Structure formats: C-alpha cells, structure tokens
Image 1: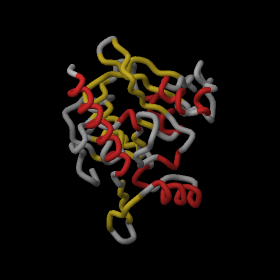
Image 2: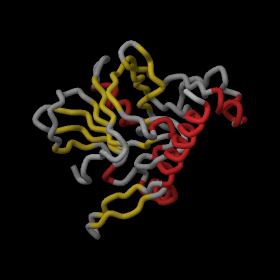
Image 3: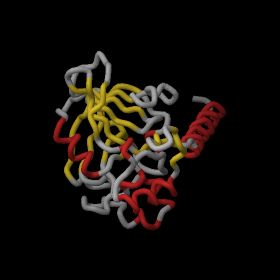
Length: 217
C-alpha cells in the first residue's frame, strides 16, 4: 500500500475510533417512557447506587427472529447487546461494553477456544505508553483485577486466532458504554453464563456499525 494511502487509512481509523468514543449510549426509562442519554458518569453513579446496571443491560430472554441456528452469537455493538440465539425465535440478551479493538469491526468468526480467569498480555504500544501496563509486559495472571475478567472467548477466522475477544471485566459499570480499551466486554457473571452455554466452534456474527438492530428488539 502506498505511504499516502496508508496514512489516509490510519487517519480514517483514528477518526472512527474518536467518533465511537464520543457516540452516546441511550437507555430506556420506563417511568418517562423515553430514551435518555447514558454516559460514563451516569453509568458509574447508577452502579454505585443500585449495585447493578440498568435493566436494559441485564441478562434476559427476549423475542428474537433470526434464521441463525440456536447457539449462534450475534453482537450488536451500536446498541451494546450480545444475543445468544435460543430455540423458538428467542435469544438470551446480554449487555456489553465495546472497547477500542471492537470499534468498526464486523464479520463472521467462530469461538476457537475459551479460558477461565485468563492471563492478560498488554499490546506493545500500551506497554510503551502506560507505566501500569509495563509491569505486566510478560502477562498479568488471571484474577479479579485482570482486564479480561472471569472468562474469555477467543474468536477465530478459520484456524487463525484474530485479535478479537469476548471477555469479562473488573469494571461492571461500563456495560452499555463505548470504552477506551478491550474488545467486547461483559460483566463477570454474564461471561461465565455465556461461556457455560456455548460450544467451541460456535458461530459469531458481528454487525457492522450503523447496522444495529432496532431498539427494543
């Protein structure tokens, strides 16, 4: 790729990341019957008060029309939902946070492997800029403070491991938000539940930005 084209692509990706970080999330308020803005400050305050995320982002069974077979995972990053398809035109819906590595990503992959309390190894660029990450350059052991949380689902394209993960988080109040790090994050209870239900090789569909399912589905 010519240098000029590569520079333009890099600028485009950077702009997409900034836009994704700036994009607001909304949640449904059953009292007013309106969609309201939901940012990081409100999310943290809500979690401190209620010890859980808003109802929209809690695990629940919903109606879900799809031709995909049960066991398929469908990720709607725009609305911050992950669906695990179930029989009878239903799905288990989980709230998710979408990290930097998840912005602009779309496609069809599969679950190549899973890990319990996985080790986190920060990328080289993070090690270079972040003193806190530098001490874990060789890998941070799994545990409650590990950025990957209680479980990780490693996503493969064919036999090739991609950089993408569905994982837990030690910051459950960030569910429902765009965040600066990670890929697709879930609270630890939800990622444990999801990991217990899926099979290795399960199909994972990630919707394109702008191709979100309708609110309330």
